[in-house]
Amino acid sequence: MTTTIRESDLILFQGDSITDTGRCESPDGLGGGYVSMIPGILAAKYPERRYRILNRGIGGDRTTELLARWKPDCLDLRPDVLSIMIGVNDVGRLQYEWNGQKFVPFTEFKENYIRVLDQAVNAGITRFFLASPSAISNNMEEDLNQHLDERTALIQELAVTYKAVYVPIREMQKRMLVEYPSVNWTSDGCHPSAAGHALLAQTWITAAGL
Image (cartoon, rainbow, N blue to C red; front, top):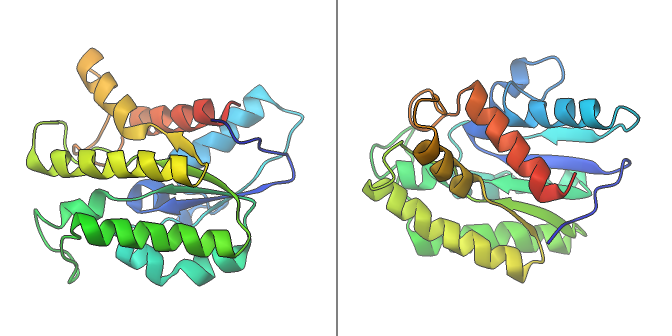
């Protein structure tokens, strides 16, 4: 399924550090990752168009924190298109706690995600891009990655339910790790390298049909 993106649309990207990428320190507020690459690629491809893009990712966020800040960081911004990539920290806290955050069980993750989407729908947002969570390590057989596979299946189901565009971030990462293991797709098994962010950007653009 594709969602038509118009030049006048405000596209909001939400997520954790993989979306954030230092956005508060960047002149355009888009950070240094895939969110900033998307308008650059689109400008090169469609120089006559002007896309409006906002980045409100926050490093360390789980679905818990995303839900808690949803009104000021999404609903009040009134985006035409909403893109969400979240989940790696919900699972990652099983490995170690950070800033008082703990592992988010699957049932709670599902409840948080649905509440985020329902609030967006009730606020009049109708076009969604739901991305599968990125890898947590280069070893896909690890328990943490198995937890993420379960959440990926859920997000696929939610994309159907909410008539959203599904963005296969995780699936593309897994494929490239197998087919091109010599490329450094991540800096630490989790956070994408420049090549990794370019892969995310291109996967999103392809899903958007742009």
